[in-house]
Length: 617
Image (cartoon, rainbow, N blue to C red; front, side):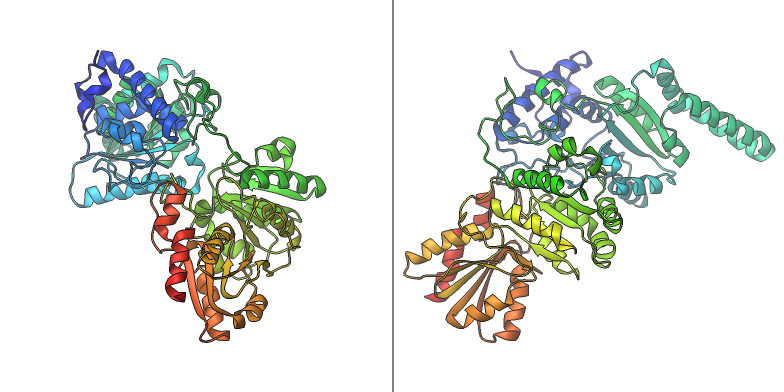
């Protein structure tokens, strides 16, 4: 028997489905998502929660003429299915395959490339203004979750959108149920009246008449209307800002979503449609553990458990050392921006709830808040993904480093992260942090290095960042654990002619390169940089006279990174010294397996060895 999903092969095919079969189609989409994501991994809980919402959007709008901006974009899988991309799920988030986020280059129904939170309203507002200035007729919708609405950029967009005198639809996808469900029929009634053509026409005629003939009466009408809404209408925050509010409505009711969007299209201003959804809906493990299924590895459908074992990761080591340091020092506090699980602070939160602060998706606030904690005499640690920390550059520079405050930045997912792609690759932190005075940057070579550097950082007393990669922690070189000293490197293997000066995760690669070069008759020196800023100039002064080639190695873009800073110093102090910088080329890196991406970027052991041999032969 043919499935309904078999009829969905291109944009607009959902209109071929009889309304009585919407629930059946939603169930098929959920099953499709569960089966495919269980094989490839990906964002599951958020996508299961937006199936009917997306169906309603596709029934109320006409793609690609109309446009939707998905905030973050990790809930776009149903949108991809309904725009003819079912076959792409076989290679979801794999190199050369379909992205896990909206991509304009992938489809003309994807209107904005997203991956970071809280920007959909601003982007949608830009599309609205572009539409109006060019005289186009299209509906613009921004979909934002209640989590992303914790970010300050969202409120900047809302504030600007409030002055619109043209249609713009903002869908608030509330999957936390923080606003009560029992709103009853009154709200549905109000929504229908307030968006009907008859009501809008009547309201405008009354206001126009009273404004000209009896301004005082008009003011009384406005006050009475606002009082009535204050008593009975949720969302008064939006209304008071000047936005029309509709809802809450059931986000798992396709017809209700379609009706709300259709009604909202009539309103000549910005409209907020508040929909209530359930994250992970339709798959019990995801409903019970939405955080774990936010971004999941491949799993067994029956149990929800991962299909492959996991080794101790750098995040796990950070988690353990934070608890140990908090036990020793009551002034140690931890801050995260809505990523307690991701950065390894869940256990810290459970043990020290009064010393744990989740500020929501607000990295700028997290950094300045940490600065305030430091001024107040505490020892704050800001745990954050590399790609998200760059949103707080100004706060790091002005509020922390300019005041030389003892804030520790624990930078997770530094370097290539793989399947999440361009928006999530943490390949620029060495560059942007190196530009800030007073900032010290360190990187561990293995799992023990994380512990040693975090302990050092908490005692340092000035701004310092410790950056480490995603995934399993390197367990090699356990015998090398020299005491940490500011700006001092660590000698791993002494040789001659070639000096491999490697930062962080690239020490493991340097050891592999050393073995390959030894097979070719060379005996390279390997040094763990440990500190990227300041780097060990004394070691370089001592070693460079006996080495023909200095090779810097980093998992960061070349521009402004470790290698460029070392090269500049070498040129000034050791003119004529040959230097090879191994770094990620200065471009955004697509999604794919990390090992494959390293090869594509030329920073894997084979590529590095080949580049060195080209210079030495």
